[in-house]
Length: 130
Image 1 (cartoon, rainbow, N blue to C red):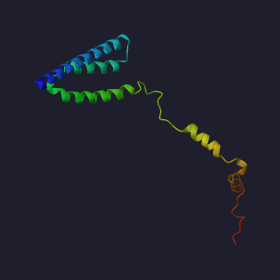
Image 2 (tube, rainbow, N blue to C red):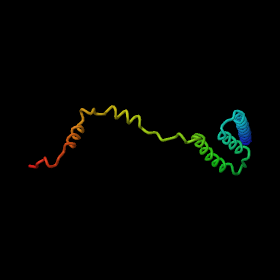
Image 3 (spheres, helix red, strand yellow):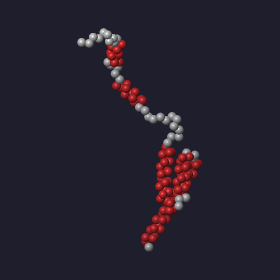
Image 4 (cartoon, rainbow, N blue to C red):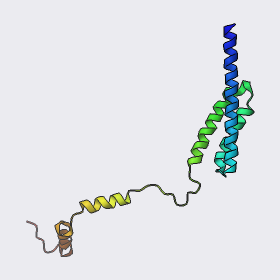
């Protein structure tokens, strides 16, 4: 007898929680439409609301698994940029220029200046091998 009463209490609490959740989703949907939320958010709320109200009991587990998958995909989709015109991958151009400026050797200290001068005056006929 006590087990049956506990089961009824849990069933009643579950129904109250379910309808409270549906009410909150409905209010969120109304607020999203009223405040002109992005259509992606409205679509997400509609999917949740339909899942809570139109879900047959036997298919609940499979449907909620598919809803969870769709919700994860939609969350990723919501955070994607709407336009990709100005998007480009991050490059280290400024960091690289700062490092090159920091470790650059002045022209008067580099040996390349001397090598370039030697190559300009190079004449293979003047060098006599020993």
